[in-house]
Length: 293
Image 1 (cartoon, rainbow, N blue to C red):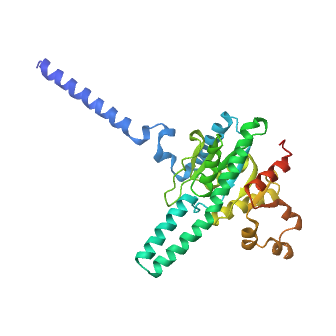
Image 2 (image 1 turned 90 degrees about the vertical axis):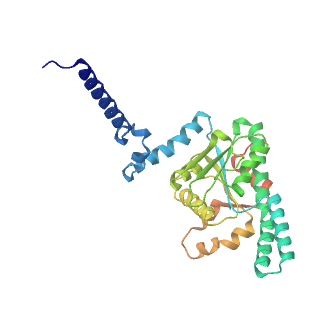
Image 3 (image 1 turned 180 degrees about the horizontal axis):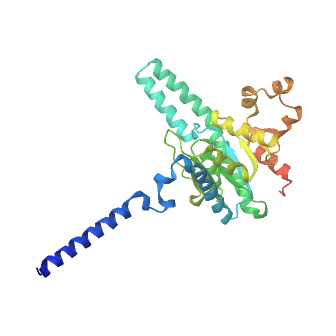
């Protein structure tokens, strides 16, 4: 029996259509994606070492390409407000208390008053970063770029001060349970986001020529003590570690007691310096490296 040409043509069309659909289905399957473009693949536990490497390499290559090899790390509380923000918050708290004299509103005013008092640290961080950046812009042979955690508070102030002085600065943001956004003063090409604290800390210290620690909470203490431990054990090169506001730090941490108990050496205290003004902090760095004035 002769085959109907029309039916044969229809069978060929149907077969071709099935082939196209089969190929399309294969191409859309996750197994067909390029490995480096497959997020589901990359996010597996077995690929953690790859993610660690990528997270290290991205900022590393960018900073190398821009010849940034010396930084000043500024860290401290993310909760400190700028004086402008703190004054606004205080005025609002006063208004709420005037309208309703409740225990809750009284507590809110106390907090607002404390925030206004602590806004001095925001100002000091901003002023210090401006001093350091202005010097670096005028003395490129001795340039040191401000680097912060990229978030609000003291970190924002440091990036803001660098911008005020007409310079660039780096921000190393971290993914946290509560949403964190980069502050708007970071130089865009130096605004990085991290998942791993360990890699972020590596980038803080790798190029650090000095660290200035403002008052802060657990995160600030974590970064401070990790830095001191690495320098103490000679895993990191010694650089100035400056604690801003001597009264705060000596109230918080009894370093002398650690010596008395024999858990650190008296010489370990030499790893720490104190400053009570932005100018004093910058002068300590100038003196350490004997920088020309």
